[in-house]
Length: 65
Image (tube, rainbow, N blue to C red; front, side):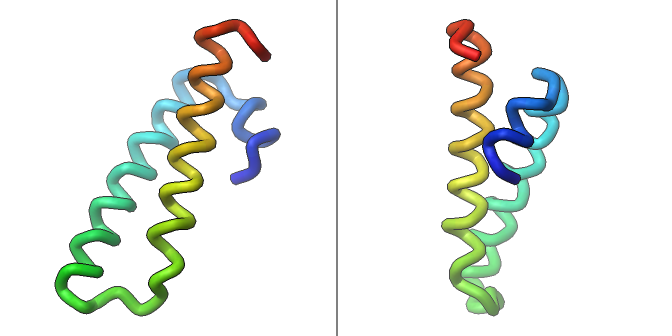
């Protein structure tokens, strides 16, 4: 998701997306540890998505956007 799409979501939707992204990151870490992960670029992609979601939440709490 791009940051502009995330900014269009409500706070509850962002939190729901964030929870799903954390679960996905955990699953990818387990797959990496057990040598089942096919594409190693998935983990950084999920981490960046988590950062975008957390940034949008922080912007909302500070009233920046």
